[in-house]
Amino acid sequence: MNERILLYETYKNVNRLGIGLRWKPQTDANQRIDLDISAFLLDSNQSMPSPHHIIFYHNKKSVDESILHLGDNRSGEERRDDEIILVSVDDVQSDIEEIAVVITIYNEGVTVENTSFMPVSGAFVRLFDYQTNKEILRYDINEHYNDFNGLEFGKLMRTSEGWVFEITGTGSKKGLEGYIDQFA
Image (cartoon, rainbow, N blue to C red):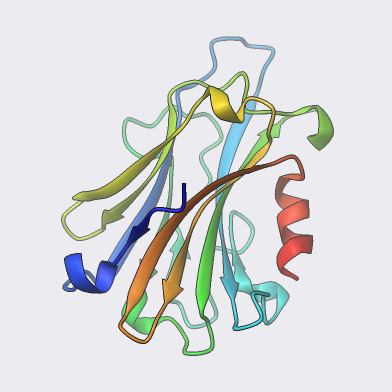
């Protein structure tokens, strides 16, 4: 599945990337499903240099302000992307080698172990040029992820030639806390 996009070749003039998450609102009033997008800034050891190197709904900007989370939408009712992370690739601090992008689910009143993407419909995550809104790629969160409550969408990786995006599409049952533990 690990498709690679050589951003430095095909999209060499794109400095500001958007990573957008969208889903349809739930019709069941008893289910309060909230999808969240997070970015983990990783060093050469594939770990966060500090707890401040996760960009998500509780920490909306990187220390160098090159990566911004534009807000937590809890309903899926936006007509555009429900949540967006903006990455100014030329400004990312030099010790950051990868930015792992994960999607997790929150279901109010339900433990992580009992939460999954199963009740979610119409969900997808996309990578796009933030200046023009031109979509670079789109990845559907479909029935293949029904048993999971987390998804590593992909990694933005710094190479000697420039930035590359690799779609990983790996499901997880560990939720946001599990990703925090993994990248600590």
